[in-house]
Picture 1 (cartoon, rainbow, N blue to C red):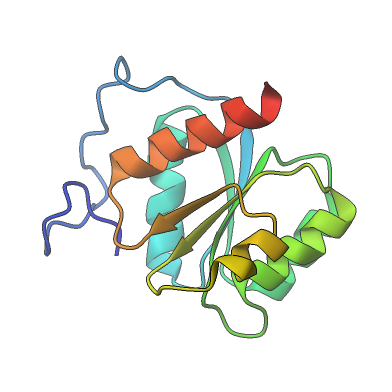
Picture 2: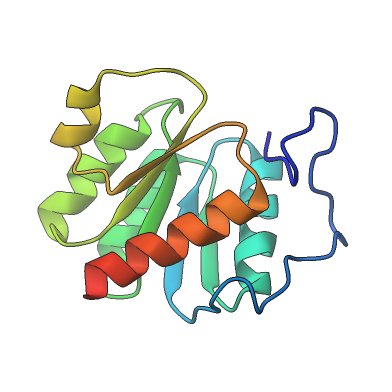
Length: 149
């Protein structure tokens, strides 16, 4: 679960006040956010849209790949959960990198994984669940700035 302040039970709900925009730079980039839990995908989209990002969410990694394949130039960043049915987030990242090797990827996971998995999938950043809103927003800006610089 994504937490606003890292306190159990204090999850983000629609209508929560976003972080002070002065603290974190706004964005305008397009993000593909993939998580098989619809609630987390919706919350992720809402948080990122509050900071100016254009976000498409998918809850199925195979369908996310199909969407990406048809719109390869649309996205500036992929954010994906690791553990998903059909295809893991790492497998999704690998398939997408065949089409767009330069696309940055943020992997979200609640389990410890071998660093080799992330290296093979060319993961730009790992966010360990539960993470808070500030961690997500700052991580997105950091990865995007690094990829464009």
